[in-house]
View (cartoon, rainbow, N blue to C red):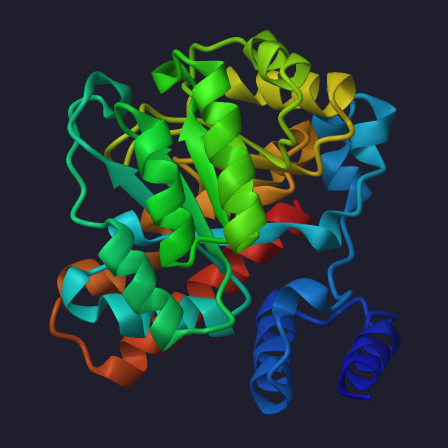
Amino acid sequence: VALAAACLYFREDKSNSKLTDKRHRESLRRLTHNWQLSPSVIDVIEPNHDEAAQLEDLFPSNIQSMDLNLVQVSASLLAADTGFLVNDAKVAHKAGAWLHIDICDGSTFSRFALSSLGPASIKALRQAIPDAYLDVHLAANDPYRHFSALAASGANRVTVQLEAIDDIERLVNAVQHAFILFGCRFGLALAPQTPIESIQRFLDAGLDIDLINILAVEPGTGGQLLQKHVLDKLTLLATRYPHIPFRQIDGGLNPSNARAAVLAGANVLAAGSAIFTTNYQRKNSLSSSVYRETSIANAVLDLQQGGGRP
């Protein structure tokens, strides 16, 4: 009933062309707060095709026809304040986001970045937010050894950095074991320079891949600019491998470039700095919890709307 009311409200109100973006966002936030709905499931965004025409002409028709309202945001905790980690994760989750967890071991596959998150962190997040979708990205040596531990800790999916995989048979065994015991899904992450064709050998090995993560920045550190050439990889992924349901772009995203990523084929937007390090938060590291929570929730929604409208 709540979902129907929300959809009806916006479908009736969209006839008023003078409705401002600010009023639109405020109304949506009020509805989602009152009814505890995820913004990602409410059909409220009406793409402006005139303004988007130049971008849309660059991509195949099957990409243009994709439902832009079904874009999922995955909030990267790499950019969150570790002192507020669980609280920030709860706010992002309540706003409708997955929780994206980067696990890096300081190897070349993470460009020598070392993260403080691991199986214990995942377990703590699962206990604190039982219904959260934990979207884990593993960039580490010997990923087969870590896969089961991450699954057992509560990960819904473990996406392995493709360049770290040198033994497909061990990978297949680890993935099958994790799925049978824990229901954990499997994904592949590709560094910016890795061609999309590299995933074919994993499909040939019989792996059930439900997500491909196209890194738009070098792995391991946040705050980088999106490398625009990866948008071509997203389009190739969507056209050559349409059976893979989730196409994630990871890094360098903000409300201004999210739509270009979606038009290229992405349906999952992984972002950290755009959500957890807003201008206000950078200037006020000791900001009140209420303002911080509002800022994070609004950032998730703004990114969602950026992916669904020009």
